[in-house]
Length: 171
Image (cartoon, rainbow, N blue to C red):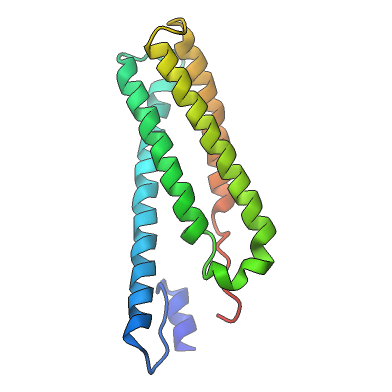
């Protein structure tokens, strides 16, 4: 009962007594991985907010296309990290134990992540083409439109993901 109450109050995990040092090490490593996921998520949110501030205005203006490409490249990299960590730690607690019951949900999640990652990669390519004059300068509005669609879909995806963590059977 004490362990359940502690978990409800925000404890990351619990260890049964008597415990082994390697059990504690595993719990600490998992907690640190989750902290890294949260830190990466903050950076991802900051990048999304910065790009939204530049592009999702009435008249999107980009003073320096190179900085825009830099932001999109960082966003692409952060999404890759975010999705990898989310699939490993963010949605499923003890995923190996519950994998048979979650395989369909996991496959759907990975498919969504793949689509988002492909979208942001295509957007990075498009920004690069604008930067190197392969596309006309008025394409900034097209970048803004594409980013707005990506941003809206990603926000919906993330809001659906809240509370989707599935505890392992037997916990």
